[in-house]
Every structure is written in C-alpha cells, then in structure tokens.
Length: 95
Image (tube, rainbow, N blue to C red; front, side, top):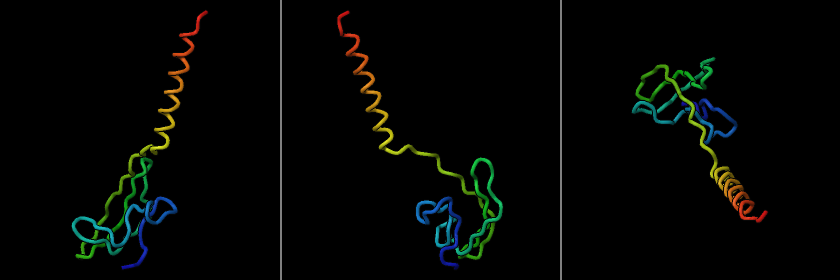
C-alpha cells in the first residue's frame, strides 16, 4: 500500500479526499488508486482501484452536493427578519 496515495479535490487531505489508500470500497480496502484524465463536466471522477482482496477495476466518484454553511443561513434569516420589521414599521407611520 502506498501511504498517502489518493485522489483529492482540494488542498486538505482529510476533507478533500475523493478516495485514498486505506478507504473501504466494495467490501474490501483500497491499496492502490490512480487517476489519469478521468473527470467530466459534472465533476465526476473515474479512477482505477486495487483492493486488498486482489480485485481491481475502474470506479466513479460523484461530487457531493454543496451544502450552505450554517452561518450563511443564519445571516440570510437575520436579513429577511430585519427587512420584514422595517417594512412593518414603515406601514404603521401616519402620513
């Protein structure tokens, strides 16, 4: 097993790993993984794998859907709440 072998989608080796040696795959453990121009416009990655039980093949990793950060949702809710209160206050003012 090559230590640190894997396919990564960013700089963080823990958070950005698509697949790496030591990961479980198809009921076995990955011991070898390689990539060569196997990415499409949808962000799917095709890669070659070698497993501990001597199986080999080509598999596809699909990108995870983007999940908004909790801070962004809170900020959006606060902004909408402030907008609602401002409109409500403007309606109560006598003309």
